[in-house]
Image 1 (cartoon, one colour):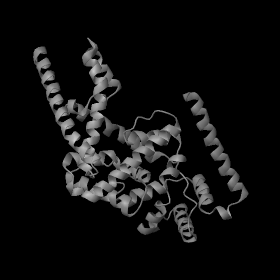
Image 2 (image 1 turned 180 degrees about the vertical axis):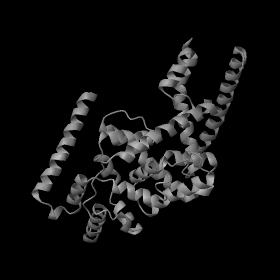
Image 3 (image 1 turned 120 degrees about the horizontal axis):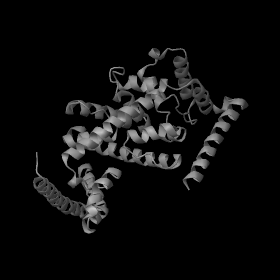
Image 4 (image 1 turned 90 degrees about the vertical axis):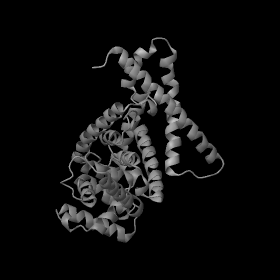
Length: 338
């Protein structure tokens, strides 16, 4: 067991090493910033280095207050408990990183159960061709008649493309938005509109990163970079080998960039498989399970959006009332938030 003096020396050494590391990162990132301002394009690794250092420098200002103000360092553990990301990354010990990872893993297991058990999803876009409408209706008939085994992979992917990110988020209830935010490691604060905006922003960052990884190749990622890429997408990492993680990430990129499956839908797929891999032996089986969870009531709304020209007045009134209810709920939240 370490004495108090040994603990003080250990912590002092840790923060000194962290300061030297931060200084080196600032030096490297300064060169990257000059390179970028000169018109050169940064690689994914360079961009992430610059992004991480910028975040660390911004965190340094509130962190410095605990050093400058006398006895304020006594409140640092409390501040770190309330704001886990307050500490610059160079000052984080391996134990701190492991705790964060374990907390995120535990949160994702719980959220995966919420998303898997949820039966509320969304409607699809109405800007479809006659062939797509027929394809979608055939898909619904197979689901309703418990013939999901007859749904082929190609049809599954064609229908999945109809579920756009905006429509999923705009029609998801707050419970699902909160669960989705937690799953992608976002603090679920704010009204539904704020939460949707923050999730959209995170999805846009993931989309941009997808293209960068695709350009460089998954094999070019180091193990820490591979783990970070999988973690940001909610891909299962626990007990997974680097080879398996590369396989999972390649599947994500293929579904996202080549098959054009929306990011939000892919996050749901990852949530379905996060704690129950055996039930879904493939990504396509998990995707089918996500789409199969749509309740009959929502199918009616989907059919209205898909084939608006042939919709009845009763169907249109029903959907209009549902949208009115959503608007009223958002207005109430806005007033309460103010």
